[in-house]
Image 1 (cartoon, rainbow, N blue to C red):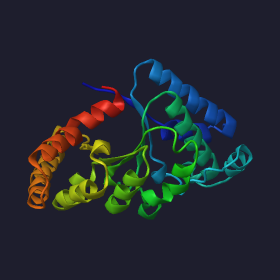
Image 2: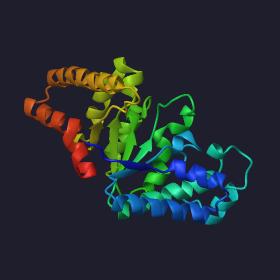
Image 3: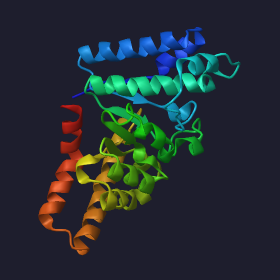
Length: 249
């Protein structure tokens, strides 16, 4: 089954390119979010890490947002304060709509500025009323900052950890990354995913890597004293139950 989510940036990029004001952009994003939820979409996503980075200022004002649009920078790098404001308002809207919000963290393709995708850059936003209001999913294992992801998931009750994509690009490290999450983050807020794309074989490969990584991680945890019942419960949760509960599937 397919359950769509709304990605925010394509709309923001288009509106910035068309010369929209900050208020018009915020209003359009909110309206789009409400519209897709009315049609059964299950969540939202930002790839702000690919644009102006995750060092979001939760106190960005509408005036600052408007001023940030008056730049000759490329559209994808334009309007940091506007994009910060959009994300803050979008998180509040998602909470009101009772839908989770995915945030791209860590590894990506050649367009990303990796230093700007460290999940710890989100700490101020996560401390804000909007950033703590509803479920936030930090996706892709935040690789290479998996320990930082585990810490945020352990200390922020509205944060979920998604292990995906890095299993495609760095398959040999997947078992260790899985153990890092299981060692610190609460099991009910750990999700496994593929982020496969284009060819179906990529989904197959990524899923296989996750299963093999779990076999290795389970063996290590068992040797450390984890009980079979706990391991069985963790497997059910991270490979399906947590995702279905979070997205209401």
